[in-house]
Amino acid sequence: MRKPTSVEEYLSWQTPEQRAALDGLRTAIGEAVPGATEGIAWAMCCFKLDGKALVCYAAFKDHYSLFPMSTQVIADNAQALGARATGKGTIRFGYGERLPVRLVRRIVHARVAEVEAKAGR
Image (cartoon, rainbow, N blue to C red; front, side, top):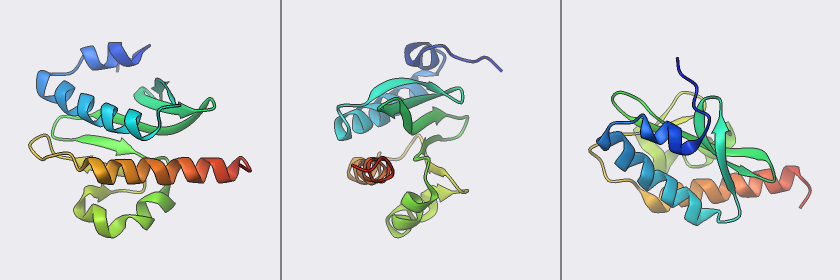
């Protein structure tokens, strides 16, 4: 498996459908946490806060995923996520569905609060 060295490289490897979906997710995350930096972690696109992984996202054959890096954040939003939450740390979206931007922002904000609380802020 190829390992990307930058977000732009990772995105360049995707199909147009995958790229469009990831661009929408990337925008929603970036708007939710404008102070975050982007990078690669675990061979996925990642937003970092103070150098620590906040959330990751990636494309797959039949879906794309948001990885909040927190089972608690997923559990706290389980009702709103419905069948999208699959596995311990994955939120899946279908390429044909509309991205629930408000839900993504809520998850990212919850993750920021979790990270800041652990840092004692």
